[in-house]
View (cartoon, helix red, strand yellow):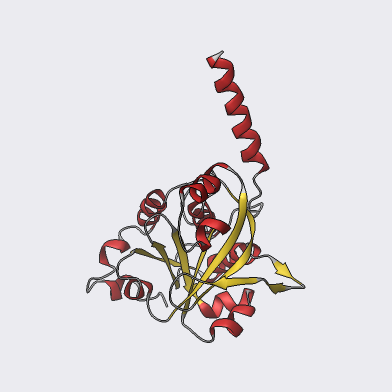
Length: 233
């Protein structure tokens, strides 16, 4: 009997997982050209949640509504997550269990970042990567596909969690195997970063990003940073 129960639960899990709508990836993975990395992006871990910080001049090319909302800040942080859990003022066990075990609606969280991410988020883990313009464009196409649109406009909901920030309706369902960190990993994967798009936890994402950065994380706050990112703007 126990064997049948386990099998039934496994089948149910597979059905729910395959029914979980995700932001579509490109059919052909982007492969960056060596020596073309000139744009700096940041990956931020706020503990359980990760996000991607990109230059706003590129982000607003794909999402012009954000320039109207945030103005000419140098960077924007993007995160994706469960609508109820992410926006809740008070986190309950019920919200956490619902987000984990049942596909739920998602939201995008966008934050104006007025300076370099490691300075703006001093209590968060930050890893910087240099990518090419083409890689950044590929990633931003994925990010742009993550937003729900109403008559070609973004669909804002409530104010964000910190700083100058905003929630927007998002594409996809949040689920145990489709988390905020899976979204971050997929976005980086779309930019040609050597990372699995199936990572579930913030720590796994940050380890993979640090490996991809080839040691640049260790000099992020050192005098050697200027040399490492000399060609990276």
